[in-house]
Image (tube, rainbow, N blue to C red):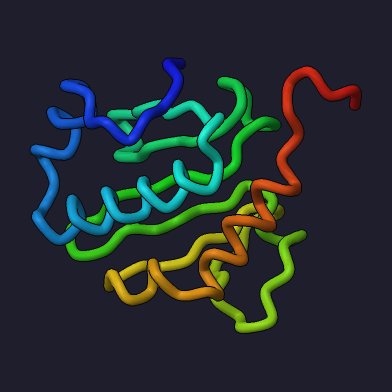
Length: 132
């Protein structure tokens, strides 16, 4: 997993080229948000799952969040979503641990409530060098 930068790699460009313009725009905005808040995070592209993953290592344990692309929207997924503070009830899903926010507009991405969820996930994600 390469260190993520806000530069768009050829792999990311190829990945996004198969998606709708709506999903591409939302993905790039969310990507910028995550990388600005967690600049040390790495980016991983999962082609079959249509997602981008951000974390401190390739393991699920060290995963901050994922961006899952759909035709007209994207989901911002949090592996520890059930444990995140969510006073505005943005999180959706019924998984044992994971939750997501369905993002349909750039205005959602700039909201303080979404930023707070991203920050809470960053704070809750262990670094590989930290002891268990």
